[in-house]
Amino acid sequence: MTIEQSLPLRDVGEWELRSWRSYENPFTDVSIEATFTNPDGRAYTMPGFYDGNQTWRVRFSPNVPGYWAYQIRSQPDDPKLHRQGYFEVTPNAARGFLRTAPGQAWGFQYESGEPVFLFGDTTYNLFGMAHCGIDVLPLLQRRASQGFNLLRVRVPVSPFHPPEGYSKWQTRRTFPWGGSEQSPRFDQFNLDYFHTVDGVVRMVEQLGIGMEVIMQAWGFEFPFNSRQVFLPEWEELWMRYLVARYDAFNSVYIWTLMNEYEYYPNGDWHYKPVADRWAMRMGRWMKRTAPHDHVIAVHNGPTLPPFGRRFAADPHAVDAIMFQYWGSMGEDDAWLAASIEDQIAASFSGWSGSAVFAEYGYERNPELELAFPYHERCDVDHTRRGAWRGAFSGLGVIHGWENSWGPWAVLDTDQAGMSQLLQVRRFFTEIVPFQHMRPAQQLVLGDGAAPGCRPLAMASEDYATVIAYLPAGGDVTLSLPQGRAYTARWFDPRRGELQPALGDAGTASTQHFASPGGHDAHPYDWVLVLTAGDA
Image 1 (cartoon, rainbow, N blue to C red):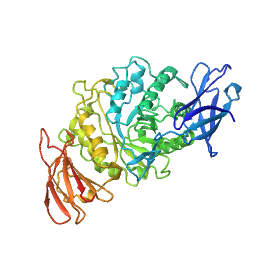
Image 2: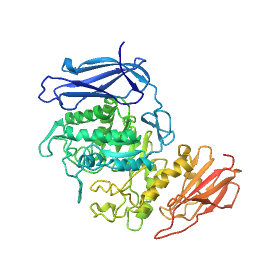
Image 3: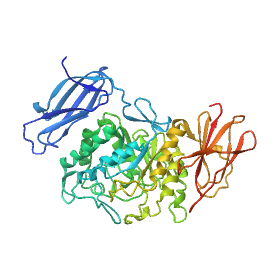
Image 4: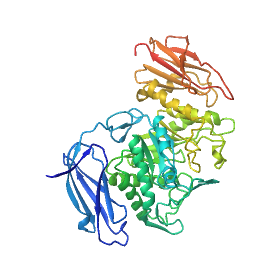
């Protein structure tokens, strides 16, 4: 056995093959596929992809150390596209790929077993911005330094969002197929664009963070709203190409089948049972085609019926829901971001998979023109309170900003709410052990609070840590384990400061706390932290 190369565990290996045979359309006239066999005899099948200049590539990331065998074959037979051999995989302390872990921590962990508090930013058109000459590396470096570990990114670029959201930064075509929107060639791919995507994917890989890679963008956009043109054969070719190019990367945390998948099949925004059938079918296709077992997700538009009912016919076809709900958005209540926790509870009734609170609006930058009216009331208060409500529901949180959401590319500065959003990550990863915290609303006594103002509670399994979020300040009365003494502190979600909290001694199992108060246009929100003396 001759060992060709040595590859660290969970690094991306790449095998290049060149053929001098002339193919009229090398994207479709020939396909290559590799079989990788690990030391225990388990085989993994990985599709390859055409990368121009009569070159095909296979990318694969091995998951166990030892000696591996591989065999690459083509269909139809082309001897230049055949290869077999052996390589060694050396041990590596890498934490590995992201995995779902329903019922554990907050639903996600790395292959190493380390629990993950998913904390993300929405940069939908990151690949497109890079392709148009914008240096995206400083933004990626800043997000990594701020503790973000997930970016929401679409492969198909969206140059326009109704009613007036034209992408001001777009200077080059980013159509990922051949031809054009007027005359598409879905049997070809825009390699110039994909080489840019490769570069960004590798940047993210080197920074040690991940992406939710959205395979099909909004369903109201071409070609996803034109299934009479974008036929199942072209859809499968597209999805297979993405898997072949990017499935081997650690930075691909999540494959999301479509943004607001209920747009399927005709671009109309409302719930359709056929969209669930599509999601289950494509989820299963991905699991058969993509050998690295990345998380398979969908992103919702409508929040009901509950996801447990939607996917009851095949509850494991989709691993995770990238959940969208914006909370209250009226002129008088947008600041509260109210009802998020209630909608999360209703939407995930009966759901056995994992979930992320992935979208609740995009913070408005008043220095930019109002191209998307729904953002008008997405202010700093909505940013902060929405994130706390999502986290107190036991979900990782992703937010977004008008600076980088879609039509704009103001990447060198952060908006006003960023410093307050960062306090959510700090609190759950440095102040309390997020992986042990669970929603515990039964601890909150009384139900007389105004809509959107009722305190939310979480507790560790052993009640050694109890926390309560007061979205509009005021008081909270908690039912606590009898005979257990707690140290109480208030955490300021605006500044990240901790200060002592005094409780009124009620019964042995009941404690009442009054928040420090404060207000500007609205009452301040506060987080109560109780730590048992015997913890």
